[in-house]
Image (cartoon, rainbow, N blue to C red; front, side, top):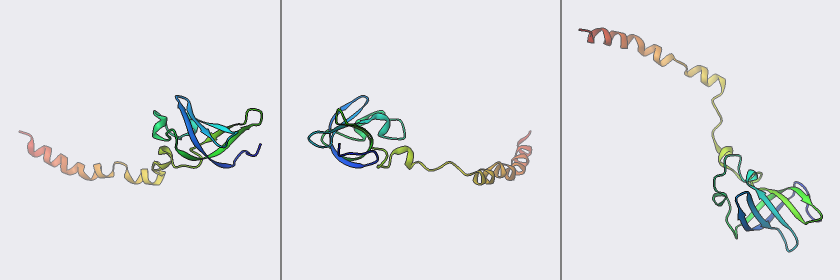
Amino acid sequence: MKYSIGQIVEGVVTGIQAYGAFVQIDAETTGLIHISELSDGFVKDINLFVKVKDVVKVKVLEVDEKTHQLRLSYKALHETPRRSRPKPFKEAQRDSLGFSTLAQALPMWITNAKKEKP
């Protein structure tokens, strides 16, 4: 077979099922982008990523020589929602936020509360 693992290929989406999208690579070769290979995040609707007749670039994950079928990954080449999320706070940033603003405001709140007491 002329395709190998890790190769980047282009094909046309020919069908969509609940579990993934089928891609025609050439006259003899088809592939499947499993739903788990569309995005790092939860995929509620495959149509948000690909549609029938879309031309897509994908990465070959597995090759079946007998059936001329490929296992493909879309998320390996495309920015997906979870990858584009900002990274969580670093430890140093968390420590600098803390309760310091509350501690600064506390004396004023106590003073105001004492004034409001009957």
